[in-house]
Amino acid sequence: MTVAISEIITNGIIFDMKNWNNQPFNVNNLPDIIENFFTTLDERKINYLLVGDVALLSYIEGRNTQDIHVILAREDLETLPEITIADENKNFIRGNYENLQIDVLLTRNPLFELVRNNYATNREFGNRSIRCVTVEGILLLKIFALPSLYRQGNFTRVSIYENDITLLLLNYSVDLSSIITILHPYLIPTDMQEIEGIIADIQSRIKRLHSQKNRLQSEDN
Image (cartoon, rainbow, N blue to C red; front, top):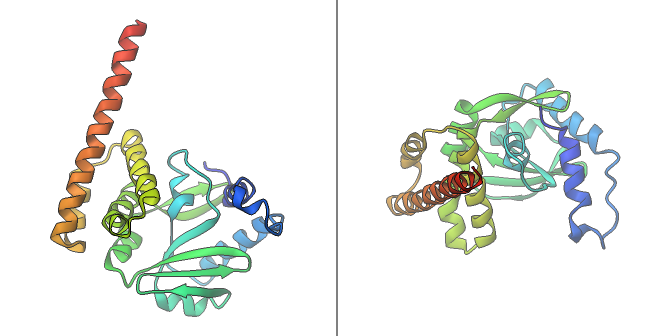
């Protein structure tokens, strides 16, 4: 069981140095806001999927985060007037539910729709069961994003995503060739070539880590 989402978000806010010189953020009401958000999704029978760093933290240890990522259909937002939209493009929406940032991946992107419909499980966060993306779903989303991040020159996020992929592959048995096959229809050929090279580098890194571990264990014995 993972800690409650409110605890994850609270820690992300408190330990982010960028927030220290700003107006204090009231974290005391976060548990109620987050509980109300997921209760609203359930009561209105909205087909959502929790993704992003909160979902990742239910599988591996990671960094702090201050927002919630979900996959939704655009039309479902019509039934969620509580979310104030701050920014929107073809595939993403950034909004606020009270003072909680919500990032929405829209199912008008066919890969996001595929992940929402086929890579879901229930995960326990505190005392609440939440519809959450699977390990395979996280890998699909993160690998899919890499070519775009490289084109943007967003190497900070590239490094974070590649590290997340490495940690998931180190901790879970995944048929990576199947993941790559699934991605083929959703990316142009040049992007697939780049991804195959990136994955080869990650696999080499994993092999090196295992080799180093075995060598050191052998020396200890």
